[in-house]
Length: 194
Image (cartoon, rainbow, N blue to C red; front, side, top):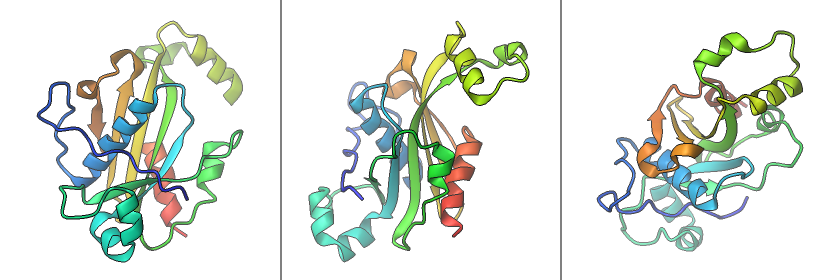
């Protein structure tokens, strides 16, 4: 496990700052989205463990200090900790099926880039395409949009997602909601069912 943590979100009152998060999980998702945005587009999927910040400070003070979480700063109640890279060439669903989290992990999050089509294009999808052919068809569609999805789940089943379109790459244009990417949320929840 790597000890990289997304930076603390910028001041929400600053010009260009994103929306103020309503819940700790929403705040963590937006923090991860901001971190991914700073890395730019065309990035591999990234997996994060979500840990209780107060417990991390108490149980792992050296790690908390390394992550900049020492003191009584206004840190988020959840701290995202980036995990090792997802092995290249491994299908995401297969990789997620191999994960078992220790008890100290409160939740997990994943950020991944995909191509998306508007619902109006669904009727035009050719039938009988395998996954590779469907991916090629979507990638060549003139109405496709690149999207970065950040999805997080907690052990108790709570979910949150953030979607950022490449063409509207701004913190103010990030869409959040618990049901935006249900399939990926289910796959992440399954990592806690061991």
